Length: 396
Picture 1 (cartoon, rainbow, N blue to C red):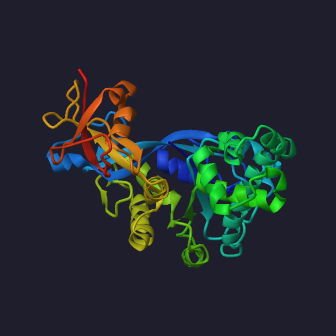
Picture 2: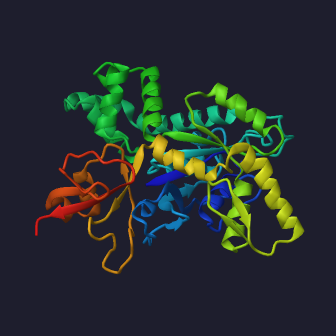
Picture 3: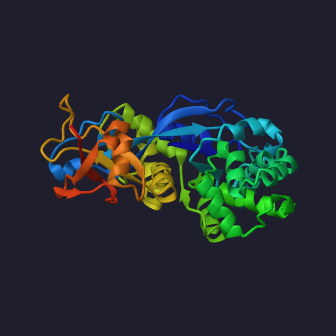
């Protein structure tokens, strides 16, 4: 699973990325600090099932803190996008194309309104961050439009000559953007367009690209710098202006400071949790910084927002669930690691889907599955629930 982190320059996008991954990336308050995309691992958080079995898990990938399991996901931080990106402004075409394989996008905005449309510093509150949400929607739509418009007349004519159904043709044209035949078919049914592509107007094509973009690149808004003056007020306005979006108040700088302090064992901190405990030898200045974050960010907004954003984009926007492989009589692998694996699957996945996710041979040899928590035997069509622990029984 790949999540793209996008936005205009100087919104704190790379700071968000670094806070989420602790990857070594360059961060600075000037446009195009990021030129090449940064790729690193972030984590979504769930309540680990180990506590229910009164054991301590040993993750093979990810980690577990205080029975909070952190499951890895891929994050991609692309360079800041500016108006005209879809036409190549600021190397925009290159950066947009880097996002082809992204399952969803996190749009990091400067909610304090202290950077203009080009990412240049301005007085806090003097720029309306709502413009950035509208701008990115427009650029993404134009990006899709640019791809689908390539040789459109020839494409439409060939589709008619070969008697190829429109949805199949469109899926083929936009396969690089994760547009499947099912997505294309359902979208065309929703829009009720003419079946003959040669009859389509520019308006038809633009409506199609917008809807396909919404389906294949769903987006969540990280309202960064909410702790800067005017940030909270602007955040509340955006909630009203964009009711269809999930908008999370964030302070990437605060989260980065907490994670780096925790890494140095100066504090106890579980990402996304409210409590920060000082345990190391901190200077007075460091203690004041921690107190500021606790009082002005965490207590006010319930968290720094970084972990919440990752969790919501995966579990709410993409509708994923977590499944643990395990046995009724044994939760350990051959090396003695307890509940070492945790997989992300699409909500609605079946026991057979999970078997194939583990290995093709396991899927092909599937006989039955066992819900380890209830010890109940289930069939291949059994719909799995979030945090299920499942044992797969296969042919010998």
